[in-house]
Image (cartoon, rainbow, N blue to C red; front, side, top):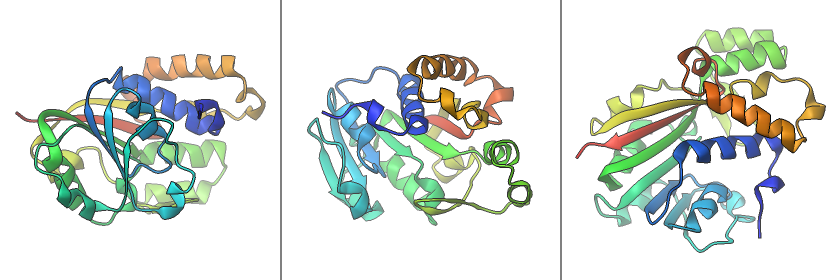
Length: 233
């Protein structure tokens, strides 16, 4: 049985905050698009019916599957097998930054989502990345490049192609933004690495992160934004 403590501390905190923001989800039909190693798909499969889609075979080698869910090795084309209005909840976490045709993907995710259903999108926030480069990593030139509109790089997935929060509803008019949260507002600026492995410190940091996640001035500099949309009925 996998436990969240197996994850790197930064990823552990992200998942815990994200799941807390989504709340207790049970008895739903869920699509996890871009499911990676299956951590979130497996988490929700305990109490829900889950379909996970992931294009990278490498990511699937050690995927989490303590609870039963359907794993598809595929991409946007795999959605063609699903009828309109199939899923109660669609998850798309840290995916769109690495896709060229974002509009096509968002329209398809909206199509398979039931009216009144929820789309959860996690995305990189450019301002948060600038803060990280300038304060934590002392990469001042990269901070300038980001401010000039250039992309940054992720170690596993290549170029991070940023997009603005409001683009989702422009790409799919059937979606309405219900909530916007910040994730990892302070974590990426904390330089005392020795503290990070302390579960007590992690709990205290999470409490602070949750407290400011919907305060606009802090949300603007969070490393990630978590957007929750509802499909119009």
